[in-house]
Amino acid sequence: MYSNINFAFDVDGTLTPSRQRIAPLFEEWFLSFCQNNSVYLVSGSDYEKTLEQLGEDICNTVKGVYSCCGNALYVNGQLQYVNDFTLTAEQHAYLESLLQLSSFPKRTGNHIEMRPGSCNFSVIGRNADMNERVEYLEYDTRVDERNFYAFLIRENFPMLEATVAGETGIDIHPVGKDKSQIAEYISPFVFFGDKIYPGGNDYTIAQLAIKYYNVSTWEETFEILRKEYS
Image (cartoon, rainbow, N blue to C red; front, side, top):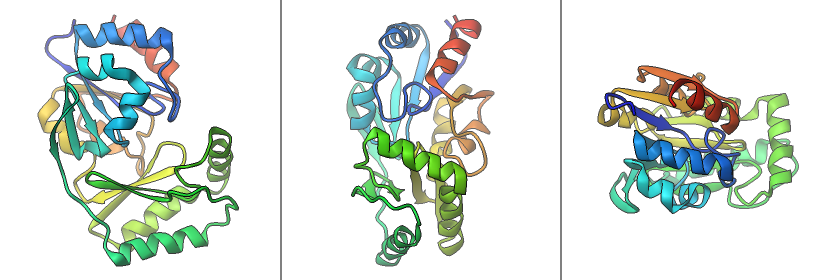
């Protein structure tokens, strides 16, 4: 047990495959790790999605679940606080224009999803199935659309921050209301995330950690934890 430090984990791509359930083998091991260490979850998604991915045992064992880029905190399944945020009509219309601008051919619906304290924008839409998500990810890898759109949002609305999140989305929130806002409450901490690069939604919080790991899969997270923190 590491009694002097906290551990903070992104969820999608770090503890689970994107938008999928945690692997049973890892779930059992990670639950034991949470029982023996001070662990926080820091997700761009809402609490309900994190609960669906990780289950009640893990979500109730960790010290806290920071949802929506830290804009809502749940402890033992109970909401402790939430930050309010709503897109203006101008901002909403601008996202609609970006949706029309994209040359990606598919639209599945739920493209502008409001969350507590934040918004998730997705060209293909949150209703996409796994095959459609993979198709968009391959497209985005080729043309770098999400990074470009995030740049445009920041340029046109300096009061907003926009970062690449998950496989298909862009997280949008007021400047300063990203994952880094929780650092003062959990320091000192070690952070694990899969979007630790400028423009990624794990980047700012990672800069405030005493150590961070930019992982590509949950398997990589599992391997690091077993080798360095067991």
